[in-house]
Image 1 (cartoon, rainbow, N blue to C red):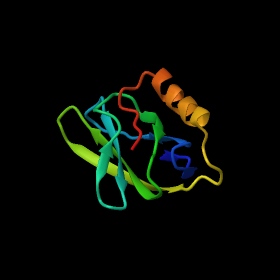
Image 2 (image 1 turned 60 degrees about the horizontal axis):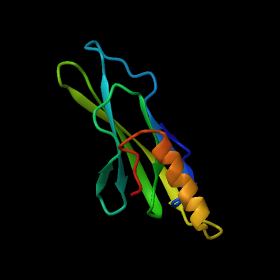
Image 3 (image 1 turned 90 degrees about the horizontal axis):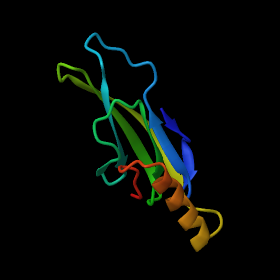
Length: 116
């Protein structure tokens, strides 16, 4: 799941999460990434036991695909994909707005939160 599914470039903080994933070989580790229209992936979290990655700021306009991968204790990996749209801001962002978004990301303590 991705929230929100539509946001603004360099101002909307996105979150990718897994909901209700089950496996016989628990615990599951998750890794999250974005795929941009040009086909490149940006990994936003290393393998983690967390079921979500948040405070993700996207710096490119267009359609993106969020990918959530799960790896069980035997090393089997599966992935799920969902779409989001990043659009232009309707008003120009001030330096204070950008600084506030970056401060929010930094305060979360997530070293993989990204400005892509």
